[in-house]
View 1 (spheres, rainbow, N blue to C red):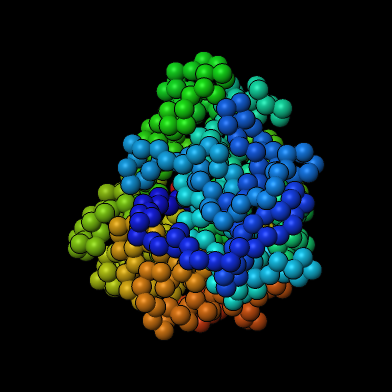
View 2 (cartoon, one colour):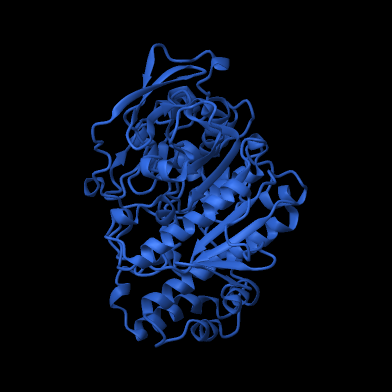
Length: 540
C-alpha cells in the first residue's frame, strides 16, 4: 500500500538530539563515530555509493572492502542522512530530498562484538514514493533498543521513478537487460551490509528479522521471493502490505512510456542529464498508470486499476512471488502477517467523513459499488447488510468496509497462499485496539479514531507517547504487541501459546491477545469469493 505522509517535521523535536557522548566502533571498512545515550546510535551511515548521473538506474554498489571503496579516517555517523528524492506531500509541486541518499541507521544496546544480539531491520513504507529511515515516530529509538536488547537498523532506499522506473531505454544499458525494482535492490544491499557489518554493533548476522509496514510490508513480500535475498534474513514481519505483485516488466515498460514522453527524452543520456526535480515532475502521478494511487483509501469502481510500481523484472523478481513460492524457490522463513481493522481511517479519501450522516454513507457506498451491479447481483445491498447503518458511526463502517475489501481480506488470502508452500510457520493477526483519543498520524490532518494504519507499528516502536499522553489501554496494547513480536523475533513463535498458524486461528490484538477462528469471515468471503474483489486490493 499506500499511505501518503503529510508530515510536518516542525511538529516533532526528536531530530534535535540532546547532548550525547561520542563513541567509536571499528568495522570492516574503518571506524564509525556515533553517540551514546540510553543506548548507542549511529545515524546516516552510507551503505552504498551515491546512485547519481550514470548510476541513476543501476544496482547499488555496497560500501565494502570487497568493493575497494571504504572511507578514510573516522566516518561521522551522528546526523541522519538526507532522504531520497520524493514529492513534498504538503505541496506536491515541490520536490525534496537528494539522489545521494543511500544511508542507514543503527540503534544498539551494546557495541560488544561478542554480544550476538538479535537484529531487526526496518523497511519504511510510503507507497514506494515517500518517507525514509529517519522519520520521527516512524522508526526505532534509543529507548527501544535499550528496553528490548535488540539491534535495530533502518534505511533509506530509492523511491518513485529513481527506485522503480521500468523502461526499455534503461534496460538496454543494464547488465541484466531489465530495469525497475532498484529500491528493492537497495534493501537487499542493506541486508548484505548487515551480514558484513552488524557484528561490530553487537548484532548476530544469523538472527536477522526483517520488518516493513505499508509499502515496506510489500517490500517484505518481494524479499521473501527474491533469489538475491537468499540467506540474508531468518524471520519476517509484514505489516499492512499490498498482496498483489504480478505486473510484468513488458507491461510496466509500456505503461511508463507516458513518463518518457513527458521527459521529452529519446536517449538515456538525456535522462541522466535531467534534474531530480524534472524527473519527479514527469512521473504520471494522476494519469494512467496513476503512480499517486490516490483512490486506494476509498471503495473501488468497476475497471479502475492503478498501474503497479513494483514489478516482476526478471532479476530481483524472476516471477510472480506466489509462483516462486509454489516452486519451492522462495525464502522460507517464519512469517508474521498483520493488518489493522480500520487501515484507511488514518487518511480516508472522503475528507468530510467525520461529518457524514448515515444517508451520506449509504449514498457513497451506492455510488461506488453500484458500478459493479452488472457483475454481481445486489452488491450494494449485501455490502450494507455486512456493514450496517446505525451500528456505530459512518466513519467506522466505511473505513471497516474499505479496509476489509482493500487490505484485510486480501492479506488473509495472501497469508494462506504463502503458508500453503512454506514449511516455516505463518502467523496472522488483526489489530482491533483503538487509540484512546483521535490521532493525527505523522502530521496527517485527518484525526483517526479507530484501528488505523501504523497503529501496530507505533505500539511496537513505543511512539504513542509522541502523539498524546497514553492511557492505560494504550500502554497495555503497546506492551502486548511488543511481547508478541519480541517472542516471534527470538523464537519464531508468538508469546501467546494458543496463537497457532494461519491455518488454525488468527490473533486479535488489543490490550490482550484474543484468539479467534477467523476475522470477519462473512465479510471476507463476500469480498473475495462472491464479489470477486481481490483484483482491487492494494497495489504498489
